[in-house]
Amino acid sequence: TKRNLVLAVLSLIAVVAFFTNLNQSLSAFMVLVHVLPTYRDKVIVEGESSHQLRSSIPELLKVTNTDHWQVWDRQEPLHENLNLTCSWVDFRPATGGQHVAARPMCVVPQQENDKWVSEDIRSKGRWWECDSITSLILGQEQSHSSLLYVDIGANIGSCVMQVITTTNAMIVAFEPDPRNQFYLTSTLAKLSSDEKERIHLFPIALGQERGNSTIHVAKHNRGNAVVGHPVPDFPGQEFLSPMHIHIESLDDIIADNVMIDFLKMDAQGFECHILRGMPRTLNRTKQIWYELEHLFLDAQENCSGAILWNMFENAGFLQFHYPHRTASLKELPKGKSGITDTNFYASNPQLIHRK
Image (cartoon, rainbow, N blue to C red; front, side, top):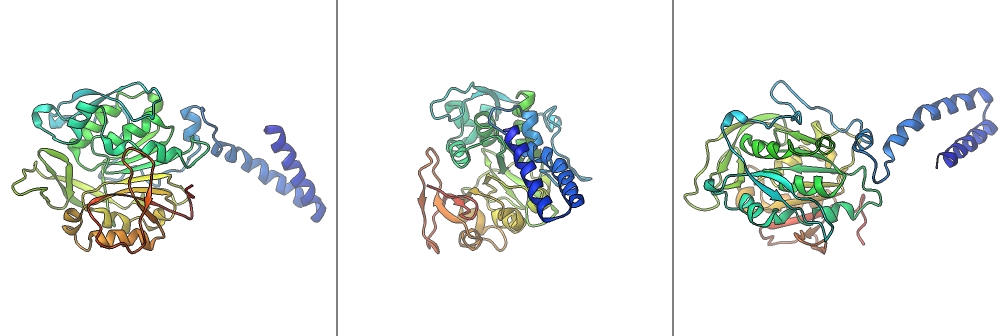
């Protein structure tokens, strides 16, 4: 309580006065008076407003714009000039039985035959791979008000919507494809102002360093969006026209003192390059869900399933099969060979202790 905090401060002053002279004690008191309001901003209790939540991470980002891109302004959808249209459906998050109101979500129109994510959301209300994110995020903290979720490869926003509707987490999301940006920001623009204030959407790709490239998206699977060159899921797969994109490293985006509670990384084979651009941020990340697909990883220079696996292992992460619908985890042994295509969950034992 405030009373206990004041008593603690006065006790500290008395101790300092005992061992030092009065002038030094007064100086210490002035420092504490200056620091305590800032500390209060960072101790957020569940149920506080989004304004208070935002003040808990005052320096979350190092940069929000360059000469070539800027963070979404939370106003109008991006790239309306592409003449794309929304098919509006109800998004219904996985809630573990708790009631959460459905939200309008913009998906790819049915006639364009996006066979995976859009069709699943249209028929089932959500994308199943995102179901267990909420329980994994909230399962680690007693206070849920200052959590940070980072989504690398946000696509049309399935996991962003899962997190924004079921937690109070701040969200930093990255999606480089302008078409996916249109669908994603059309959805986000319809959220409440408090919800939108929790979202920082970067219209860029992440990689090892700043640069430029192209993104190649499969015509009937918008989840197959590959940086640099097309990688078909099957022979003869059609792709949309490649589009120019910008690349930054995550270490150049996230502030150096920020802790990430959960990071999702689904970048169609670009994961090795992303990890090489975030060594400092990786050390401050508690949990990661990442996709390991040999076809896409092998198509990138200096990357493979084994290389990606070892990058996490060498950074000290414990690795598990990712639980799509529950938070039941099965730890995998170190140096595991013969890794098959699947999603994995990695936790940092220095920052998180699983029961």
